[in-house]
Image 1: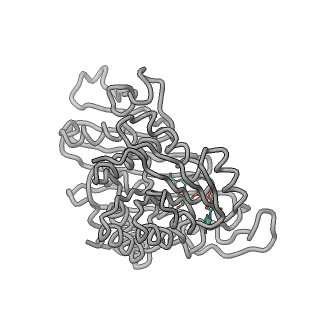
Image 2: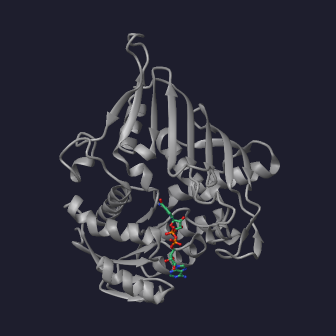
Image 3: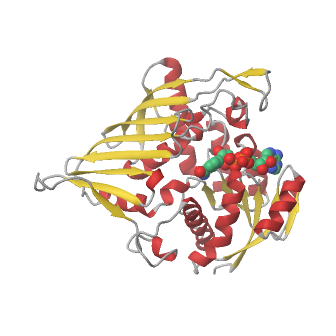
Length: 376
Ligand SMILES: NC(=O)c1ccc[n+]([C@@H]2O[C@H](COP(=O)([O-])OP(=O)(O)OC[C@H]3O[C@@H](n4cnc5c(N)ncnc54)[C@H](O)[C@@H]3O)[C@@H](O)[C@H]2O)c1
């Protein structure tokens, strides 16, 4: 029933290209039940980078043209780690060649493009995955289980934020990340992660009232250049949300918060307790249980270990800690297992589309200065 080997074609050799390569190399070591990923080919618009990456990551071949990977019959799976504006074209070509697709987030620049990608994948019955790696953390799985089991009681509120500072310096040049051809700014780039996390923990978001701002109004066209180009996308997003389950929350996304490196964090509050998480300490979940002895009550620190699957697939000892690339390995392991079983674990294209609906509603709300319903 299961295909024991899956040929992998990876497009892009940047930050995420490397993370995908690590994950495909590690996935079988962590998860012996999955098909063997065979690293068939890697492509980049820069053919030299592709050749160097093929050597370094152990791919059998490389190309300066991503279409070579689509045409290669030895490739069953295409991983797309290019800038957002290329996602749709590459995905649709891969799907029409019958390949399963992992695409980095956000799925595409617009809701209409995302829907086209969802419908193409579903029509073909192919397995898809989108790179929302942070919810693959065993601590997030535990948080969701605790919420679902009622350990926090009725949920009364959610505070979520994804703050980094990689665009805080006005001398940082214009890049594909602020090219409007790639969609909105930080509300899509980092906002999609905290929206994904909020949905993973508490379910759908019904309505939103957002304030999106551009803090750095122009940037040099290249490092050190005095030629400036206006910035048209948001640097900072603040959102009030109402969840479908009834409780309210706030979400923030910013890439200009000086000093913040990976502040992807949440606090979820219920009548019986609260949970607090911060990706900068991704092996910890803090749990406050109401009703204890007031002299000794406080947040308890839960440290990840083999009792929190799939931590034990990486290390037999508690507290030794997983890292970012381990989360990506969990994601790839689930993706490859999903292909073998014919069922996506997600987040798949459909879930990425649902996340994009929230992004679009935030953009609309910021323009109308009013509450917007998140599209059904
Ligand atoms: N899941 C996460 O945590 C996470 C983190 C960072 C980025 N991302 C997403 O990953 C994607 C890539 O981001 P990145 O930070 O790796 O970018 P990057 O700029 O580091 O790398 C992009 C790569 O794509 C290549 N490329 C560009 N155009 C191409 C083309 N036409 N054909 C082939 N290769 C091409 C570039 O040469 C480069 O190697 C984006 O969608 C981004 O939102 C996800």
